[in-house]
Figure: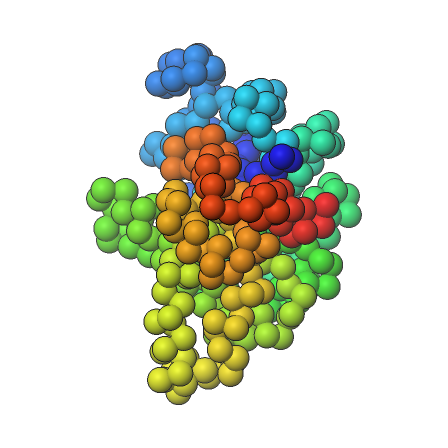
Length: 344
C-alpha cells in the first residue's frame, strides 16, 4: 500500500548564528562530527545540537541528508515523507524578525529538498507565531513560492512578552488566514508542562507531551477557534496526546461548569473533535484501536516522528500489524488521510 509519513523532522546541515545579530541568547547551533564520533550506531556522520553551548540532542545523517532518508524510506516501505522542522527551532521566544530569518532559512531548505524529490517529500513550513501578521506572510511564501502544503506550529507560543495558548485572540487572524488558504496546520507539542519542574525520567517527553497536545486541542475547542473556522485543517501530533482518552472528563467539565468552560464557546468539545486530524503515533495497539473507535480511521494519518528514538522505528508497523481492521481503513491511515489533510 502507498504509505505517507505525516510526522517527520528534518534540519539543514547548517544555519546562520543569530545570537549576535539579535542580541539574545537561546539560539540552537549545530556542530558536525565524523562517522561514529558522537555515538552514531549507523556509521554515518552525525551532529550535535546545542543551545548556548549546552548539548541538546545528537542527531545522525538521516536528520539532514535527503539521500539517507530516501534509502531508509525504501527499506521501510515509505512512499513519501512530510518534512517539518524540529520544534526547538521554532524560536517563538526570540525577536520576531530574527525568528523569521531563521525560519526562512529552514523553509528554503525544505523547499529545496521537496523540489529535488517531489515524489518522495512534501513540506510543512515554520513561521514566527509571535508576530501573527509576519506569520501569515511567511505562510503565503511557503505555499506560493516553496510549494508547501501548510505549516507546523507549536502547541503554545512563548513570546518575549508572555505565553499564548492557541486560543489567544492575537493568534486568531493567523488561523483565519490558514483556513482561507486551505493550509494544513500540524500542531506539535513543545515547551511542555513540567519541563522545568520534573525533568527526571524523561517525563516532559513521556508525560508532558501528551498533556501539552491536549491543552492545545482544548484551547482551540473551548476558545471557539474551531467553531468560528469550520474549514480550518488541524492535525494533532502523537495521536492527539491524551485528548481521546480524557474527552469524557473534558465533556463532563463542560457540562457541569459552563461558567468556567463554556465562556467562549457553547459547543460541546466532544462534537468538535471531528474537526481534528490525528497522527497514529501512540505506540500501543489497544490505544490505536480506541482512537479509531473514537474518531474514525478517516481522521488518522500515519506519523512516526522520524528520525528520533521516541518515534516508531519502522513507520507503519503498528497500522500494518492490526488484523482486525479492514483494508480500506488501513489504506486510509497509511496514506489517504494524509493526502486529504495536505491537499495532495
